[in-house]
Image 1 (cartoon, rainbow, N blue to C red):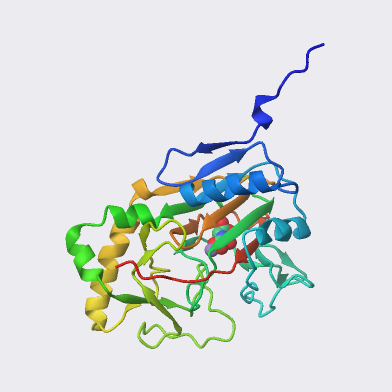
Image 2 (tube, rainbow, N blue to C red):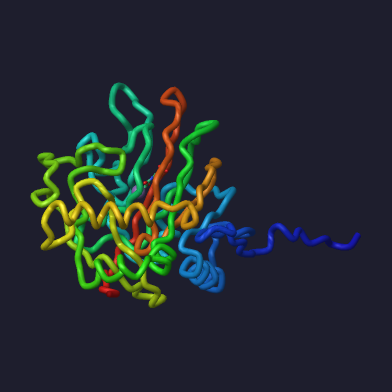
Length: 293
Ligand code: OGA
Ligand code: MN
């Protein structure tokens, strides 16, 4: 009998049709050779967010694939004050599950607001990878937005207002609204801990420009009066939150989603607290946050 070729198993990249995102079909992330890695890397730079479905990754395999892109950052401290999964300092657990009274991960079950990961640090990760282990029947979808598309369509008056400016990326609250371990909360954006980054950045690998805002809460435009800073940030956020820059992912167990943390933001919908949602994340160390305007 003639051998048949299962076309669905041949590697191919299918864009979502939205401003960002593509699904890569036909690849087992436990066995990525040099050619496949090169194709994945180019697709990731082109589409900013990649989805790989039906994967079978344990923590070692997730870390091994992540390391192909560079050294990993240690995970932020979980809301419990615990630093990491025993033996895996690179792993961040995103979960609402509580075991023996102790949450096994961060971000709970509520909405997580738009943000870039760990941009309150001077050198934020260039990429994050999130792998789904347990997923609720509905809710908990993760939305992504392209900050390069946002920049490219930013009106001239706003471009002029952000030119040469830096914004403080707040380190007080995580995207679930929880106070980070070891931080005394303040709601004065000028006093809050965080790192300043250029509002307009240029991507170190593609040269494409993007807006870089981090998160809205407690953010502060350097050297402006608080009221001026708030007005400028409100105008920028009204622009970036437009649906045309977004794509939303509905999770299945075995999905791995990786995003370019330099030129995208993400958020998450709330879900039923009675359901379990467990994902493991790695973050690939960044090398620079170059000014783009
Ligand atoms: C993250 C994150 C949102 C989600 O892992 O960095 O923001 O969908 N996750 O759980
Ligand atoms: Mn995040």
